[in-house]
Image 1 (cartoon, rainbow, N blue to C red):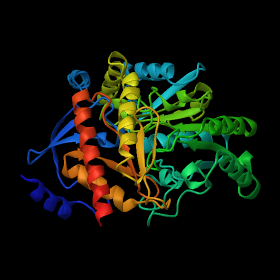
Image 2 (image 1 turned 120 degrees about the vertical axis):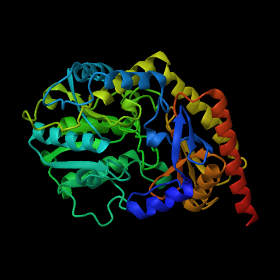
Image 3 (image 1 turned 60 degrees about the vertical axis):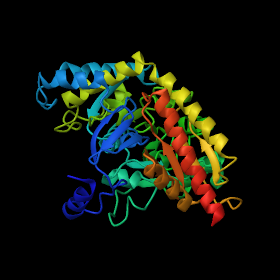
Image 4 (image 1 turned 180 degrees about the vertical axis):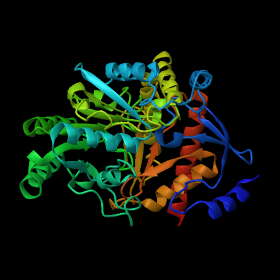
Length: 429
């Protein structure tokens, strides 16, 4: 078995619609390192798209999984319930922002969490319309695609999408969009397209993920909270990528002085096991009738055991604080590289949710080609990176928060070498 033979089998057996970034195949992984079937080792700065804040195969997570497998792996919570579901709901109710009464329901994927948050909002308000933001990503299900603010590749050929979903601009100084522009667009939407009394919810990522790691300004969150309160609209925070310590807080909404009505949580919640959650105000969460929420695999006991261990690790190893330390080190390295890499147009992000954006020097035009070259060069040197952004000109960094200092130094040196080499090659050309 080799990467080459597996690639041929993959191309013959699986559809092209499942896009794959790497042409090698994982054989094993530990913490922030991964080895392919040919024995080559990589430093993983993708973490399964923000799923592994506690790293590959954290010993405490693996032990919790093993212990639960010895007891039972499935009953379907809606048939025969189990204490771990209730206990994790209690923990998230206590850990999420706000001291109001909360309840939590569990699902399997981030897209499921988004779908159910919309269901809950509609049940609670008796309204149908939903507002999201340009550049947002909320999943690949039909409602998830409708809410996602990017056409290619997520929406191509899949319409029509659920009705009464609307988009407004997301503040982005590099694109000339201010918070006032975003709020103005909401008011215009209410005048021209949808009565605010028909709007069930506004959904927002505190830091856009696929959209480019742009953080929502504090004044936007304050304005949204006021607007929602004025019109009886629910505010949903999509914390699927931002949650579990990535932004230097356990949840990104802790950066703001407002609380959402509902939150979606997934990705790093269970250390690689499929688990998601919707947490929100108790009265809102109770709006759907019995049987209206759930799923055969929703709140799987093995995934719940992993999540309990993840929350223990986050606390025991002070990974929220570690997020800030690692993010600062990365930003310092990127700022130093600006002198040698004129394509660097912006360095941003709270905590360890850091991104670098590339533009053609002196033009303000996104440089997707340079971004791809840096990603490819880093991969050739053994560092896995992900791109994002509407124009594909942003590299985002999603290393495990458990990465060692020595491995982080090695990764930053590799990143610097790749960026300098490609910048020099561009100048030579």
